[in-house]
Image 1 (cartoon, rainbow, N blue to C red):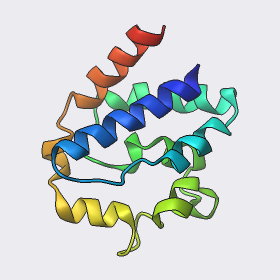
Image 2 (cartoon, one colour):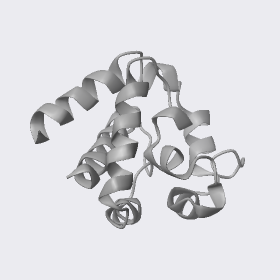
Image 3 (tube, rainbow, N blue to C red):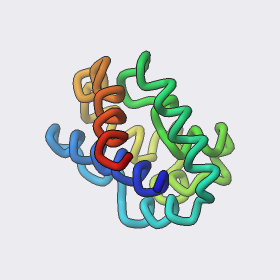
Length: 123
C-alpha cells in the first residue's frame, strides 16, 4: 500500500514538473526500485514525508522519498544510480534546478495537499 502511495507521489511531482516543461524526473526504473523496498521502509518514508510536508516547499531532499530512505547515503540510492548523485553538476536534479524555479513549481502547501489527497484516495 505505501509503495504505491510513494510511487504516485513521485508521479505527481513528475507531472507537476512536466507542466513547466521538465521531463525525466521520475521514471519506470525509479518506480521499480520503490517496489523493491520493504513495506516497513515505505511506511517510515511516508510518515516522514507527511511530517515534513507541512513546512516544506521547493524540490529538496526533505521531500524526496529516496533521500529520506537512504539518509544521505547516495552510494546506496537507486535514484542516484538512475539520475546521478543529486549534488553533482551532471545529475538530473541539477539540470532540473537549472531549468525551473522549484519554489514556483512546488510552493508552500503543495506537498501537504498532495499527500492529503493521496491519503484520502488510498486510505
